Length: 418
Picture 1: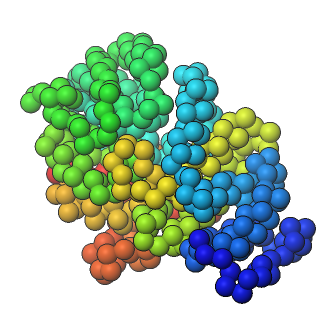
Picture 2: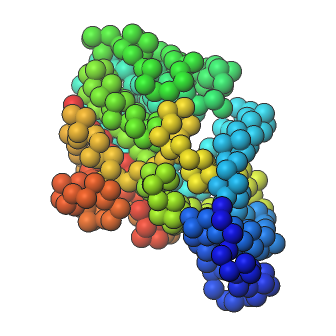
């Protein structure tokens, strides 16, 4: 970093003045700091980091929390210590992880917010429609939701008018935090519930993969007489940006009836090329996310605090680590619905439109939660910006549906067929 050429420190407000200016001081100071990092203005970076450190608190109000969650990422970006810091935080998180605590966190989040259940209901609707009338079903589950999606699908299969099909569920584990002992517990619960529902059921786990590119038909034990569905919830963003198209082409070799894709709606793929642009998108998205958590959980909720810590690690991974294309299975480089749609079309997939029943199920789900949530169809997203290819919006319009929070799209759910 270069020093301020004038030799004197830049004019920056005192912390007390910044905090009492009546506006959203955190966003303003964070933007200034990101700009200083981009310009390599060492003196300004140091003053702004000091000011943010004085004002930030993970236990304070919304501005203080926002500052705290971005402060570490900006500090690591400025000092080039992001990868080392991220690995340390991840290690600490893994040591404190248990099946019961992780499951409790997921279920509590699903209870107060449709952030994850939106994708579950939309995906289940597409899978049930695509596999309707088939007798041997094979769902390949690539997600990190501890199979909380599947009880409702098992219930639906148990009440089908025709013969109850045989369901084989293969869970692909790539996340380091999901250890084999977790999957053993999950398998027991799933098998018990399937027996209760009267659904013939087989549960398999494919683990030990470094990344999704290692998936093969043999490893997944896909048989020719099975009707295959591939379920990807928050999984594709874990793949390095440069490897995503290849992964989608790999899915084609499994000859699925349907592929469901659910991703958070943001574009974090500019890190190497335009730090400020990526920062602005990161700030927009996580401000919405943190505000949603604040309105969904009590202020003293342990679950809220745990989700905020996960959020802080994700921000560090995006802004503090300069390798969004790395294929280490731990990317956080989200893309928008239009970008995923273009990749899926280029890989040889076409949209599988959700039927009215599936859409109605999603609408019914949203009514269970506090106001502020809504379903948005894809045509309203066709003109969105952040079109990285420079092509017209009509050629990159997205399929699927969007979950919106206070009119802002936050999660994209879609279904695709070969």
